[in-house]
Image (cartoon, rainbow, N blue to C red; front, side):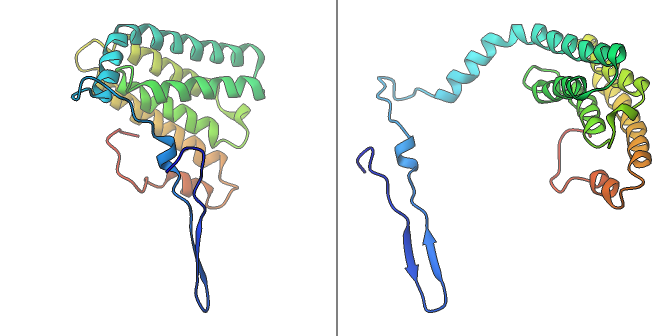
Length: 196
């Protein structure tokens, strides 16, 4: 198909309905690269590049931890407001998302628990600062102690306790929202390798 000329959707009309088949313009999104090496593997190249950056991951995760701690300190100093709540949520969310890539998979569950706590509390200013401290301190400790043997088991135990306390708090603050807590506490539909 020539570039720049998009296909049009096709319409098949029947007595009681029509079937519209959208155009498949994906071919236009793919570019062919002429390479001299027929065994060139772009995925292998990407993994190699990622491997070269691996020495930086620890520093990047430390920087994310500092960002999370600054967000916590901002809340302690000035209380909850929209900006401070968003800063805490985004710092925890970024750590959750980067944890496995940066080689710290055990830190994702406590960061996820903090995100969940912020997201599902009707009024975040009611979240006890000690509960926020426990989550932030858990994330920082897991990253700090990541090289020690047995840290994954310790992190899992710690995360289960944090999750239990968070669930108890969420059940309490959502007691006037019928069915809400049950919806967020139900197990996921898809199985997961990570503990929640």
